[in-house]
Image 1 (cartoon, rainbow, N blue to C red):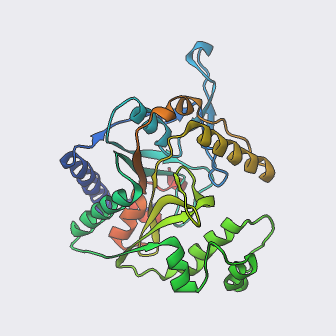
Image 2 (tube, one colour; image 1 turned 60 degrees about the vertical axis):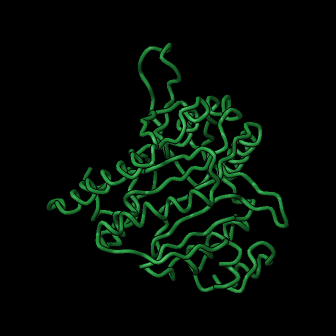
Length: 318
């Protein structure tokens, strides 16, 4: 490494200060939660770093997981009555290294009590617009339902199209279909056909996903049922993923178990679910939450496609 970009360090410091001012004005409390946990992330598409604690056995579980987000402890605080809160800190994801990914990165995650995902998407837009204004820019905004986006741009109904119809637009990409589910093909259509065409000076918000892509979101009954979640993009970059949060412990346990079943099918290490979260989830108030990748936002502000340009020390130089 020949040296770091001083302008990038100053831009990050300004953005961090701006985020804190944004939430202070809105009465949202900044908190800090553990980076090491006895529970991991069961999501089969995310790999965690795991380490061992060598101290006295009375201190707790020896196997510890570096957090992939602060979501679970933040929800425990919500269940305890902390109210609107956020955390800005480092998170870790194993195997995610490359031009646009770093295994260690900064995440901003916040929760609004009494809100749904539609209310929260507008606050997320406000935060991103404020960051752009600080750089003398502003973006147009498109808010589009997931189903309507696929119909408008691809002429496909993602809820009802056959698997062959979903695969056809991706025929030229050489994708190995082995083990891919319907949701995998929908994700590939989004990342390969839709996302790259999003205009760089536009904030695109997609909401109300297929119920099968609910993650930790509530499912709204209907025909078809929909997951109450949204994703926000600035240009082609996904910046944020938000939910009208599920607060049903039995349903959440079933989703964790389903995640681990998928892990077994893929030959991956099973991850212990967060029993402390499950013990209090029924007490968590109705709320919406969102996680935003700070490096992705910094890349957009700096006008670069390389995550190394916004880091003091990329993974290879850490």
